[in-house]
Length: 223
Image 1 (cartoon, rainbow, N blue to C red):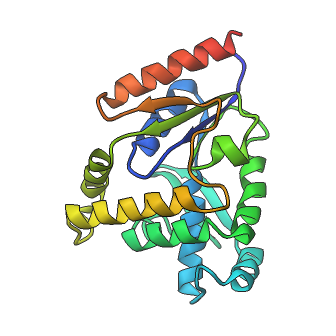
Image 2 (cartoon, helix red, strand yellow):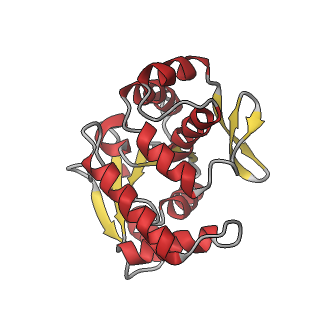
């Protein structure tokens, strides 16, 4: 079976991470969480006191950054300068900061090259927000995974409630704000690629989503 590039885009909380990891495992592919890369830039910018709209500061930062996605016994981890920042980037504050820095051309230019290098050998599932529209417009298989705001907020709340003092209402407010920021930005807005298979995960379970994706991929590979 030939190897291809698979992209899975969609808004926060749609289930992209769970689906992407399991799909990659089922296919025997590598999994790349591109959102973690943007969060990594956001984390380092915040630590350096650089504002999300400071393009010069962000450019200087990106020129020095050494971000790497490494597969370990704990799963996929993000290293910055050799330090594991995987847990530090998973906070509501970093989510909002990542949304802001992802709209800056200097950050996107830095990560675009890094992401495309990861796809050179094929056999990879990329999770993100503009994988099928901007980063890999030539990808053989594209998906856009969505769900209702209420369902997405609840899923994100369950992920955060054990480690952070957040309420469901706060999570939903932040999620809706991020949706607006991501979909209305001028540069690479969140939207389905014209040739993406759109899947609404609101009424169906993860297993059904993955099976639907596998059916499309098998059909594509056999063409």
